[in-house]
Amino acid sequence: MATGIFALVFMTVLVFSSRRGTEVEQQREVARRLTRPADEIEIDVMRKQRPTEGQLLSVLYNFNLLRKLEESMWQAGLYMRVGDILLVIVLLFGAGLFGGNVFFHQMWFALGTGLLMASIPLAYISFRKKLRLRQFGAQLPFALDLIKSSLEAGHSLQRALQVVVSEFADPLATEFRTVLEQNRIGLPLPRALEDLLKRVPEDDLRLLVVAVKVQTEVGSSLAQIVGRLSEIVRIRQRLRLQIKALTAQSRLGGIIVGSLPAVVLVIFSLIQPGYSDKLFYDPTGQKILKFAVGSDVLALLTIRRLLRVNY
Picture 1 (cartoon, rainbow, N blue to C red):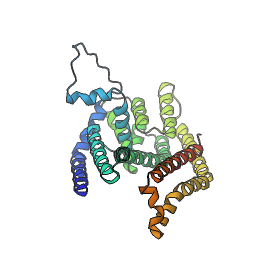
Picture 2 (cartoon, rainbow, N blue to C red):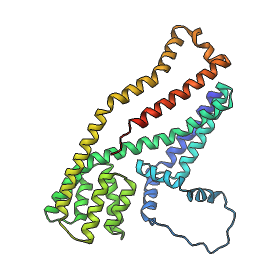
Picture 3 (cartoon, rainbow, N blue to C red):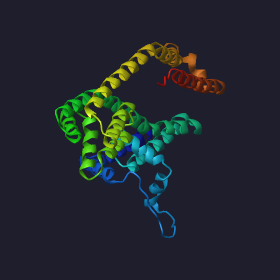
Picture 4 (cartoon, rainbow, N blue to C red):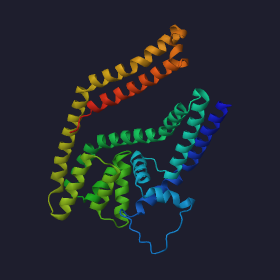
């Protein structure tokens, strides 16, 4: 019974996601984001009415939670509507709540399972976002070199960006193509680059945006500035890799120490099944197990926070 309900929920999620994630739907979402002003100001002179179901998402959107989720989806390259992701989260939460209640017969475990299942789409968006930003950062120095060469050859910045779009792959080509499309429909190039910085919040890209803005207002040799920026970006990336290499041993040690209790418990359960029964069936053992899981998760989060280097 439980397996059938799980299968039905997951099939619904997959079918709905595939229907909403078509190429036509993605193009419509991209066009909507391109044509929407950056700062939407609406003055309502009508009497306030009770929000309907279609307006509930708008009400939630004003709390900036859905706005941040939409920005994260855009940064991850997922051109879907926020309502689709919310539906997937609700379905997964219901499946996890039901499955946790069936297997554990406790409300707290069922609620934890539901929250864990509901966090899967958010974790996937976060993973896609980090991966896409990392790929963009790896492509950026080579794009700056190409922009410098195009500017030195006498081309304009718009033409240099067109060359970058034609020579590079996603995600850098997609983002700069969006900049060119925004500039084509009338948005100034510095403003389009500022929107690019919102979609790709990279410190290395911020240097390019500031350089273009200063060159537009003051005037200077943009080719020399871009060439210098390319060197700075490479130095920053080299330092980032060195910091990652220096902290690799500590991070690996934290992962091993954090996963060791679970590994030992699994080994004992396989070698001597009756040895760990008290942890799962005895009330005192269940309390000890809950405390151990909470302490282990807290220790992993603490180690991760200590190893985070801000630079």
